[in-house]
Length: 77
Image 1 (cartoon, one colour):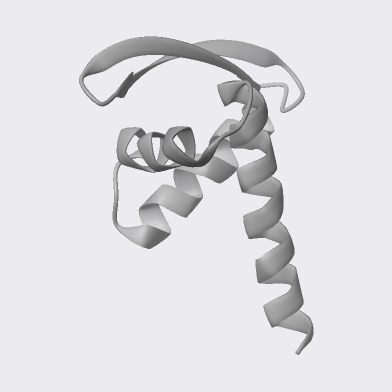
Image 2: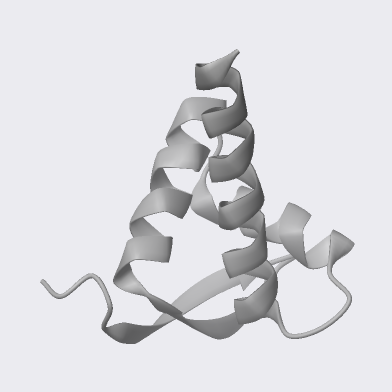
């Protein structure tokens, strides 16, 4: 599977279905974050959706980037 490939995925947010298009690498990172937090990916995306200012797919990428940067900062402390 190409990590840079963009795939459209169906998600459930607050009871309604929508789709997001993100690269496989971001999707896999999102799944790992959800697992580490003990929540479903739909629950995690619902939280991202509540906080976003623009496009949901972009908000997911920015969320994953921010979480990755936090983890990197913790690792170098």
